[in-house]
Length: 503
Image (cartoon, rainbow, N blue to C red):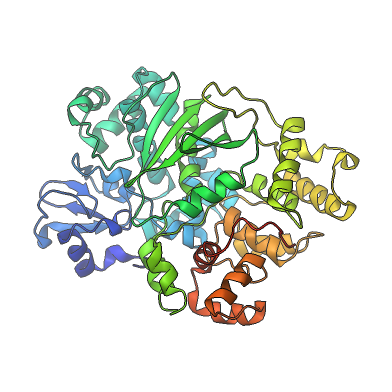
């Protein structure tokens, strides 16, 4: 699988004829005779090859006049892995579109965040995705509207506003054009069509006002133990918890806040969201998918790592490991500093004190969450003398939060990985381990590597891999561009999280 796969007609036809779900989200099949577009794994009888044409995005299909299939619901496919594994302009733009930036700030705001002109951004997105930023955002609004129509009893006018539409008329026209059904028809047909075997991301129940229960799809295989185990083991009290088989945490969102509960199921991740403002739904879903690395391509990752005979048994034992990431890049960077050279328990304690003192309180009637993690602006106002940490780390902490607060350091989804790494390394107290763990979990670099990590070195020694940082880095060259996933397999052989974290 690679960039521009939709141009490889023969390969796309084979994927459609075999109903291969691994290709869902990589490309979309438009059927010329029915004017419908589908995901590759659509359960209907495949059309004749001469009646198929292929597009790189749902938005491109919609622009070409095709409507979404009612059987396979292609608009709910997992996202393309390309946008999480690349750091170029198109990938960064797509991450921002998913985060709702076009709806909140328009195309000029998107371009400004990327440091390019609107014309350059539009040209590159059109060239690669067949659709510009407005069309991509429109497709996303349509999917958000569908989720709200099918999962809430909200009036259509409120749904239109929450999904980001400028008017009721635009909302009605878009839903009818994309799904070939009016909003009321979508809602009316749901009870007859909803089944427990559904593979879409729509909700199957709503049990409390403002709470949505969604199904987040992923590409199989997925081994969830390290993913959820790490999140639970490092959870900051008040902000995160493990309760009733679900990882729960608070979310700071553009229009308000939320609480999410995520639990692994055989064919999806169950996601329960309670939002103070429904306009944050698209952003919340995007951040939860990013947190759990649900748009990864595990087959490509595992195939590459299996080429190393010493890693292959680990991959075969538990294929589909994901990289646990974050819903808030600034929060993770702060926590990485708090975790330098202390135990995991001590890092959680330090973070919990900051949360109680400076976090915004929230109500959680369903659990024990109490606060949002403090924003950089709040942490920048903290008296350094009040921080219970060594003076050198105090300097590291204050320098980091000052730069996050004034915007001189940007760790957002649009950040340039190479430039951001260099900025982080220039901060006092930031060594290679801290920079690489932020690159892996906050920036989302799939090739970030931690050769100095104690757990990695112990696992390498146990497996017969080189254990010195230089030799291990040389061996890991064959694992590129998926070294962050190799880290997960190596960590799984040892007690993790590590009790002593380097700088």
